[in-house]
Image 1 (tube, one colour):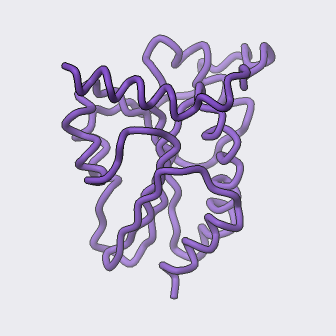
Image 2: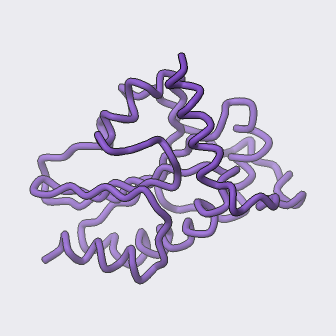
Length: 172
């Protein structure tokens, strides 16, 4: 139980330098037509491994995390610029269930996210965090880039150039 408390504090502190509200009131648009794919960790696992030549970029984020929101456009640009180069971007939201309708869906609509968005709704973070990567503290943003030959994990925010540089390493 102490580990869960420590993990929750660590996740909240990871965004401590950016405390202003990132989402504005204009987000309250009609988002009923957005169907969220909500999974527990066993449903997310299929997005974390591959035997194909495709390169996957899996970003763990939340609407309450300002560094996450700041870097999301870079993932969207990678999705757009590299989709024809056998790269898939998957955005795994760690938003809490009570904000799916009021924050997450409106955020997806307002920002016209084209990358695949999957919601991870699994409270047993003690078991699934080390399955994503053994060194992950649970802080976000966090990104996993992998293909069948290589895996890299990053527990930090990216600029577009930094993200593109890492992806290009997988495409050589």
